[in-house]
Image 1 (cartoon, one colour):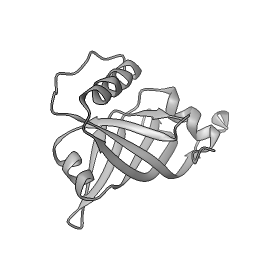
Image 2: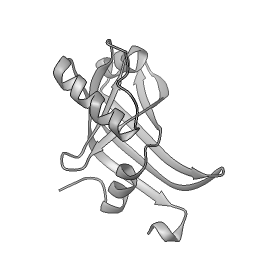
Image 3: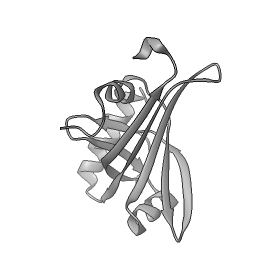
Image 4: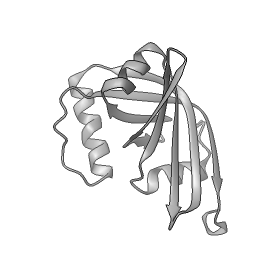
Length: 135
């Protein structure tokens, strides 16, 4: 059974929105935008990243992901996921995830060979809609 409520799953799968990926290492939070793909059948979020975000996940796998849809500066809905991240160093799995994520955003395959797949097992999910039509 999914940790994410069905209404929140629909929001996560719907549009190619930017997510804010929160990590923490050495007692200091770090939040950065990422593209993502939610896999409802696995209750997992995939991101492909590098740099500080990746180093932070390796040091502390507890992460947060926040996605919000705005319309002319007004929030329509927000979903926040808390979970445990795992870095997948397998090139084949990373390439496959990159293709899935890029397809969601209708983007070309990126050229960042040092990016790695991070799979986030969702532990909890909260969501809120600000538009009755979304309920």
